[in-house]
Length: 130
Image (cartoon, rainbow, N blue to C red; front, side):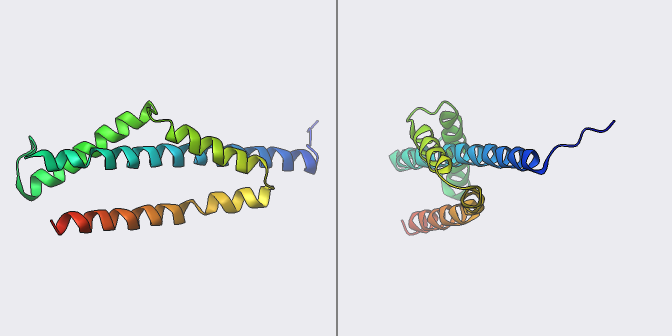
């Protein structure tokens, strides 16, 4: 005999899966932001002097990649609490919204990413002008 779930149960399961995905997205957004913030805090290290990657374009590229890896590793332990704050704020906002609002909030994440990419473009432009 096949056990069929009522439509309302299936809908609640889907809603729970969507809410879990939204919370996971909120956690990822918080971690990404903290990593970017830490990377920006490490930027002045480049101005101190020549990096151990040498001078020139290659040294700047590898130095930037190195600082990004350090920032990502630091962000894993969430030292500043920024990721936790963002995750908590987004989760609280998601708890007070309907499913449609949750889905539209998670759909806005790519626009946040494009804003971050745009900001990084300005950051790169500023370094080229030095």
